Length: 143
Image 1: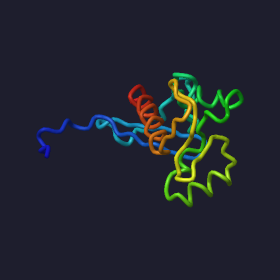
Image 2: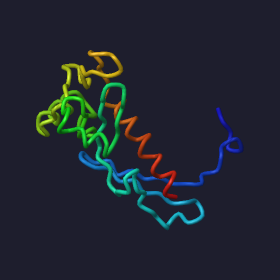
Image 3: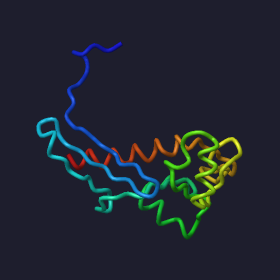
């Protein structure tokens, strides 16, 4: 277990507003914790679509994923926060929101084509982890 002395001091605070369609990242520094900045994404937008797409061997996140919706709707995972939680809630939200990606009976996303596989199935939390990792990179540039 790490001791308090071994932990690096906090230099940036990050907040993520994770909604069904878009996400917003805000951040502040430890020096000025009340001065909050809304981070911009890689295309200079303040809001980033909550979407992950699988295109051949590419995993696209945010705006690039959202741009693929018309070309390959079954390969784009949208409304990510809505398909988290219990299996019953995830299935109900999947149906209510009219999601186009495949959703298995056991609550996985897929099967879909990615990286040379035609049968890839993922937990929704795996897609959310990729989205959050990308969102945090925006905060690193914004604080």
